[in-house]
Length: 425
Image (cartoon, rainbow, N blue to C red; front, side):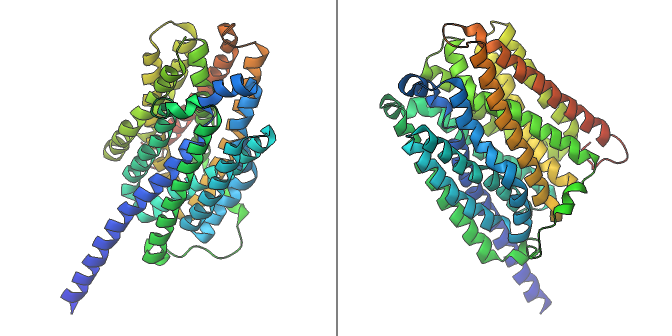
């Protein structure tokens, strides 16, 4: 009798183990499509300027607006994840993302394009944190670092694909600004299919087998003020790092490489893509190192320090562009690979959705503000092909913000070395 039960349990464990890897695959596909659409404006920025007469502030708004919905909805999304489960939230978010991407591709008038990006922003923030929370349920805590690193690594394929799309989809770009946007909408629809598959697996497996039924009670907003100091330090790092990396790389980098470094659109897109390409392979390596050796706070300090170094090289030297690209690529592989699993170690599972929602909300505000400030600084200084020096104030802003991110990482490192740490060191 006991032998039969043991055999049955072993079979169930093996089946669950196989399913969790399928969950990882579908989660990665869903978020990768979201990453593609998130970055879709960067490669056509120059086309929008030349063909539709957009200025830098209008470009900044197209990317900044996707962060605005999270200022209102991120906390609710996080608490809904705790209440309804990650799979349901991911599915609903993916459907909204397809609508937003389609409206963006229609693109005229400008107000409709902005509204489409706003709709996509509703999806973009919620689906990411829902899938991170889902992986934390499907994988044991000691294995969540590798799972999250692989998830992030595969997600970078979306960012890499959109930057290299100027090469592999060059015929679409040759037809103007709109066809690349319809390509993004199609890829976003593929992400919806992946979210449907994840939801089906999650429903079939049964939520009770993956860490307990979601809570059905009223949303508890009080839990948002019960986090300890380590969480607030890592939250600061989440927010400040995102406020530097994503606005620069997704909105301004390709144009900066064209106007200041003299690259063609294809070469600029390729150079920018290598940041994400490196992250595809390096992120799991850093996740494994964090699991094997610990020292997560130390790794975050070193990874964050590479960010201000990048802007010094870009703004003050004539070094080969690939040097700064490699530095930012290593930083982008290291910091996300460590910071998301570290967050799950600091926050107990029952409040993980709320914590991720709060992080996403503040990241959204920071990225929206950073996009708009950088665009305003560039416009005010007259940045462009005729005045490459006009980009200097924008680079200075990103440099100072990255120094603030480094200060948050150092504060977390100091806290985690003491008796009130959470084992990050």
